[in-house]
Amino acid sequence: MSREWGFAEALVAAIVLTCCARGRQLGASAAQDLMRQKGKMNVLFIVADDLRTSLGCYGDPIVKSPNIDQLASKSVVFKNAFAQQALCGPSRTSFLTSRRPDTTRLYDHNSYWRVHAGNYTTLPEYLKMHGYLTLSVGKIFHPGIVSNHTDDYPYSWSIPPFHPSTQKYKNAKVCRGLDGKKHANLVCPVDVEEMPERTLPDIQSTEEAIRLLKNMKSLENPFFLAVGYHKPHIPLKYPKEFLKLYPRDKIPLAPDHKIPQKLPPVAYNPWTDLRIRDDVKALNLSFPYGPIPDDFQVLIRQSYFAAVSYMDTQVGRLLNALDEQGLANNTVVVFTADHGWSLGEHGEWAKYSNFGVATRVPLMFYVPGMTKAFPLPGQRMFPFINPFTNKVGDLPSGSMRDDIVELVSLFPTLCQVLGLPRPPKCPAPSFHVDLCTEGKGMAHYLQPDATIWNSELIAYSQYPRPADTPQMNSDLPSLKDIRIMGYSIRSDGYRYTEWVAYNASTFSANLSDIHAGELYFQKTDPGEDNNLYNTIEFAGVVQKLSAFLKT
Image: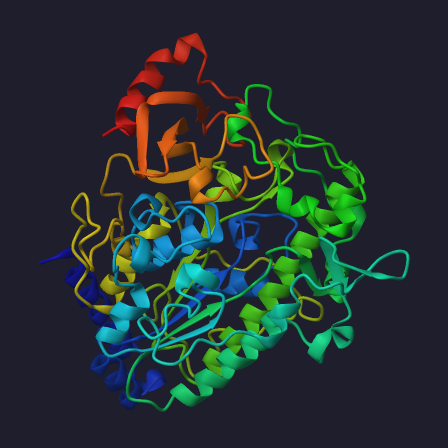
């Protein structure tokens, strides 16, 4: 029996047992509906933008995220999930096609994979082929040429994707400064009533997603509803009342806010997208390392956390609607992000690197009847939690997994969960293959008695650079300017990176031409502050990992 069908059978068995044990509570018709929909459960796929693991369910002592924490309490939560590149377009294209950036040939925001690399089948496209109604709200694919200016419609979606009308004001001068004037700031708490159209993009996306849920609950076809929230992506624009959750004197600096002495210059990202904001420009910082003053670092961190809590309330409204429409018992919920974000660690801000704070993401799966038993009569699965009025205490933790996993594995994993044929493993190369996966199915981890199947699990990530030292385009080099590629491998014991020569015209890396390296041991240096690559006593480890990276 294959692993994917083994999981589907286990899910059906769990539903049968739950229905038998709770037949009166669940109701005979509901139990029959669930059985009829074996392999045809709905999917609510939620993606946050630039969200690191700063959530209560991941142990963050500051951030208030009660609604995501509630979802986590009923899910399997992966503590060590990693993106394949810490940039929106490449990461989203990677996990939606289940191909790594070297196969999508997308490292910037300037090409469409179907034209530039291969006609790869996407996750929503595959589900659409299997009878799903597929819908996109907000930011799922990266907009623009990356998704053919259509979010890959009509290939991936049954109807044209929805984009909030107020997103066009993303960089507008709506942030009121101390001078009383409006600016295009990085830190931007706002009065929503003063905003264009008197709303914000993520509020609009939630309203549209709820409208779709109400319309779809009576349809025969299962649905795949993907909802992409724009926050906490910069600018950090959010309703100003969320600042009340984070008194400034309670916000610490990053524990390692200095640039590590042994960090190779090529590994550093100079956070140029922050520097163009009016409030950051006013600081008159030197390039590339000029540190942000401590008091302004606190403001950035405070507003990032506030933006996370704002996004959490939107997730809470969405999950509450799923519950109210009677869909929580037959809808798989996946919550994740495209990549993380540095909040001053290593003297860095934003994404654009191979550091764990930039590549590590939240990832959780809620599978009805599997990760959480069906509720008793009158019980709610996802009641909305208001962080201002509800008592927000510690929620029971879900099933926390320490295993190293990758976002490129989302596609095959959802196929397993839904009982659909899993795409075959990609050959090398696979540019000519429309449907295959470079990830691994993770559904066995969703079972209560799951064990680690491999002796060592590895996550791969990469990031391009135009030069060995920080340049104005180091964070986001165009393909033609890429000269170096930083390839990383990560296990539960270490993160190893080699920065090697890269030929953008042939899409080829010279793994023998090493410009710099990084080696961090996770147990003694979880913050990745002490680079041991050039330490003589670890030369043997470097040699071994270098050989492994080349395989």
